[in-house]
Amino acid sequence: MALYKEQTLRIYNSLTGKKEVFEPLHQGHVGMYVCGPTVYSKVHLGNCRTFMSFDMVYRYLVHLGYRVRYVRNITDAGHLEDDADQGEDKISKKARLEKIEPMEVVQRYTVDFHNILRKFNLLPPSIEPTATGHIVEQIETIKLILQKGYAYEKNGSVYFDVLKFNKDYDYGKLSGRRIEDMIANTRDLAAQDEKNNPQDFALWKRAEPQHIMRWPSPWGEGFPGWHLECTVMSTKYLGETFDIHGGGMDLKFPHHECEIAQAEAGYGKSPVRYWMHANMLTLNGRKMAKSTGNNLLPDEIFSGENEILSKPYSPAVVRFFMMQAHYTSILDLSDEALQAAEKGYHRLMDAMELVEGLPESPASEVEVAQWRQRCYDAMNDDFNSPVLIAQLFEAVRWIHQVSEGKIRLSGEDKLLLGATLNGFVLDVLGLEKAISGSGQGQTLDGVMALLIELRNKARTDKDYTTSDRIRDALGELGIQLKDGKEGTTYSL
RNA sequence: GGCAUCGUGGCCGAGUGGCUAGGCGCAGCUCUGCAAAAGCUUGUACAGCGGUUCGAAUCCGCUCGAUGCCUCCA
Image 1 (cartoon, chains in turn orange, yellow):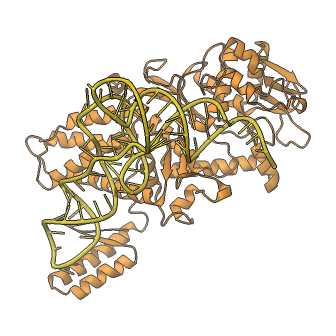
Image 2 (cartoon, rainbow, N blue to C red):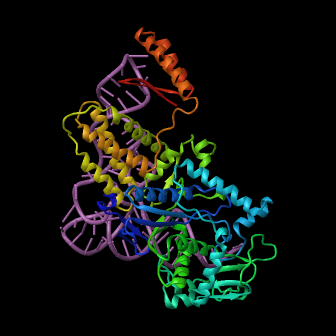
């Protein structure tokens, strides 16, 4: 029997503001769409957190036995410098500045994006569609919205008529905004704007002569509006109604609000059953911004080449750090916090290594099956990974106690404990075992075994000068010796 | 200025009416030739001020602060 039949998953739905029991549209199948990056620069660490959160969501759904179609797009056209349909296309601008083709920009940063996500151990989505690959579908959708009367053409551009839409539907229901407030707060610049109302947004923009990225359309040469691609591609691959739509909190308004409006205008029904929004990542208590220098690139964390952190941190440690916070909470990254996460991460992973060799007893003194359910309870409660991790550390304590002979564990429970830990740590949280044994691993192991043997010989001979010399010299090279009950091990 | 999310012990971070997660640090202990590593033990904290309640970190109001979006400004 599939796990999802015995577990009750609840998801905080941003649309209703409540935790709701998750029931997919089609039993056993889940359709999930996540707004992907605009590939005009190196992927932002905050973006990574969002995608990592939804990777965890995806992994847990798969773990529960659902067949998930996970669609995450690549925005490679139409995303303007500001979101009020002014300014330049982000990708065109970068192409102009670097004097290369827009598609070179797209290619370069798509590759970067994939590389970074692979380091963070994110699973690839089922489908990763691009905006430029769906121009035809976008034009068709614009025609549909025009035909339904919720859009108008002006000088080769097509705009969505928000006020008209709001009469028949509810614009602002996702972000809790009222159209009256928005109108009251808007400066009157109708004179220089071709939109009927400042709240209207572009479905299609006429390309100015210097604009490089352009496609023919019934309204002349132009390019699609940013909000449209997500509506078009989610509908194409997941249907007019689908289960989960995710994205960063910063996309809630206007992007997701516009997606709802486009879909409702076109198809007459709300597109998404569960809206999920991941929260922001701050750095040393402040938002990340290139202009203030309060900014970190993922690779700068891995390499340690930055002015903010005291040392490099591996992708797995950063992932563990992020998983220790709930995805709906603002998370603050700092050197101190990463150091703490690194130690905790190693404690967890080291304990997992011990499970297999634990002594077995006829009966257990701990309730492994109940603990396993507590792990599920944590994840069932809106993917509460921090509470899950707290439960995992409960198991870490047991492992050490069993290892020291203080409590007993049956062979059956040992298997269950190990399988549960592996399932949650590796499959659900997506944490990887500490990197060891690359190309040089075996050689290094051999050298270290020799040094450890020599040092232990010196110690038994009470030649502490020699033994400490070995220990200290290795320490200076960044190799730490660990004297345990079972002998000496080392770590880099 | 508007909307939204939030403000928890030295740090990070769960918890949303009574049953006080977890990680890191600190301290004590065990182990050790000495250390390190590892393990064990230990913390009644919930921005401030009012209010509701038998009882609030948890509900309500106000103030202050943070983050995002919108506006303003530029």
